[in-house]
Structure formats: C-alpha cells, structure tokens
Image (tube, rainbow, N blue to C red; front, side, top):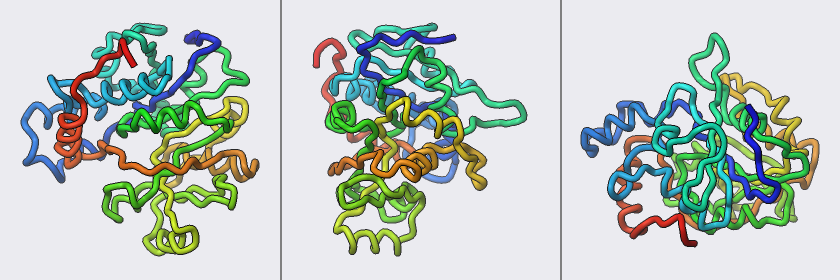
Length: 300
C-alpha cells in the first residue's frame, strides 16, 4: 500500500526496524536500572524505552527536535516483530497528526528463512517503496536511537546540496576512543565532499586523518538524499558478508565512487546522545531531565 505524500512535504525517514540486539545484551548497565526500564530494554524498540519525564519514550524527544527544526512529515520504518511504536502513537495506515507533525509508518519485512531484517539500506528502500511519487524530491534519513538536536535537523533540512550528511567533530563527541571506533569516520576532498566513509576505523587511521586534516569527522547516520540519485544504489546494495545485512554506508560509498562530489559533508560540532546499550539509559535519562522542561508540538 502506497502512502500519499503532499507535494511540499518536508520529509524525514526514521529507521527503527532493527532488532535492538546490543540493547538486549545482559552484559552492562543492569544493576543501575529499575525493573520497568530493564524489562523495556529487552522487549521494546530501544527508541520506545521510557527514559523521559512522566515515562515519555526516547522517540518523543527525537520527534520534538524534528518538529522544531521544520520537518512536516515523518515516516517511521518499524520492525515487523515489534508494535511498540505503532501502539504508542496509535498509528493507522496513512498519516496521523501528532499535533502539527504528521507521522506514518511502514513495516520492514523480514525475508523468508531469516530471523532479522536485512539492514538499514533495505529499510530505507522499503520506506521509499511505501511512499507515493518521489521523483525529483529530496528527503532526510536518520537513526531512531540517536538524539539529533534541532540544529542538526535544521542543517540537513535546509542544506542546498542534493545529497549531504552531518560530519560530527570527534573532539566534541563525549565518547571514548573505543566507542568512536565502533562508528564510522569520514574522508573528504579539499572542497568538503565525501570521498570515503570508513566503518570501525583503527586508532592509527583516526590519528592519521587528524594529522592530515586537523579534524576527524564522524558519521552518526544522518543524511539528506535526492531520490533520483540514490535509488539505484539502494536497489543494488551489497550484502555485508560479516553482518549478512545491506547497510546504508555501503550505499553511500558506492554512490560517491561513481559520482564524485555528489555528497557534501557538513561540519558539525556538538555532542549527541546515543542509546545503544543498557549502560546508556541512565546517561540519557539524566540529560533529558536536565534539558527538557516540556514538549509542545503545537508551537515551535
């Protein structure tokens, strides 16, 4: 079933179809959690864990920043085995109004003989398949377990480039070098266009880039794409042999390999909350309690 998209819609696609496998590991952070949060961390999509005031899920805060940045429509890609997002927002087929923000969902189906989805590139392709005419249009895409700021969303939304990403300054990210090495770092040309996106970089490569550029850029998986330019690379996304998934960074790499200077890396300097494992829950709770007095989707 196709979801109709208004011609002037400012669209963000949020990828929330993963299995939350790292969150469900019983290795760290358990002793700090009450029973409710522990249960949620092992049974819900991680963006639906009640880390906010009055039991608000993480996703509420993400959507609020999306809204204040100026996006008008959000398409959620959800896991076919988890209905926590659909039930919380009472989503039906088509667009629902979250006050002044319109949200809809599509289910990332799991192929036969598999126990998990096919990855982020597959999730994005299924999202595009669910939407009505997108030719000639641009959209943004991001993870559901990172709290991108309103400023971050605004930069992506208002970028003049057909394809862009936020290039986070490693020195502003309050993560250990070991955690940085679990993300992806970027290599750019002299004009700031992406040349290479390197997943799980070595510490040696990180320092080499720092010495060369004086700045290490980190991808936190927030992109803007032109539908016409990215579609064929999503359709032809390779399967990562180690993870057995089709992943968005590989799509980006293939696109820029064949089309140099097609994706601009926007320098961006601020920390970002990352809700990956149980040990992150208390950190996220503390930040939300200290920085959000209330959430109002009626006024920007």
